Amino acid sequence: MNKIALMTWHHAENYGTAFQAYALKRLIEQQGYEVDLIDYTRLNSLPLDHIGILKVLYQGIITVIKKIFKRSIVNFKFKSNTFCQFYNSFFTYTNKCLYNQDFDQLNNQYIGFVCGSDQIWNPNNFDARYFLDFVRDPERLIAYAPSVGVTSITNEHVSQFMKREISRFQFVSVREKSGC
Image 1 (cartoon, helix red, strand yellow):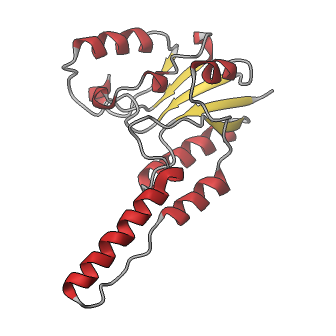
Image 2 (tube, rainbow, N blue to C red; image 1 turned 120 degrees about the horizontal axis):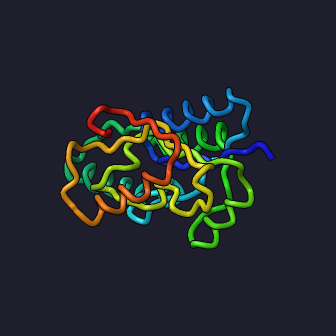
């Protein structure tokens, strides 16, 4: 078993998010490991498998606008298929992680865990899962260029939690100097 589980933002319709996930995956693969993205989506995020709702809303809004202006509006191609194809073509995933036991099972399946890059440690979007809070052995943790995204943390509770969780890591790099 020479597999690494990667915790990062993914399944977003954003080129930067998609490419940072792919670049980090490729970097780990170049070190001789297989990489699976941890199939987790924050509750307040919008995963691509729910994008159908937005597509219906989008099409409804365009229909209403066309009726109001009684003329054809330039219709742009909805990008969800492009991003879905990219993610499905270039990534493999863990089993979907929804519950604590789903995350806990990963400890038996992977030799290491990497979290990064992007603003996964931004306190304004705080989520303990992006600190790999479920990994039992701290020696298996690596933080690769996570961004805090702010110059100060105003929520003391979040600050204390972040301090405790980050101290578990033996290997940490950060994206920007202010993240130090």
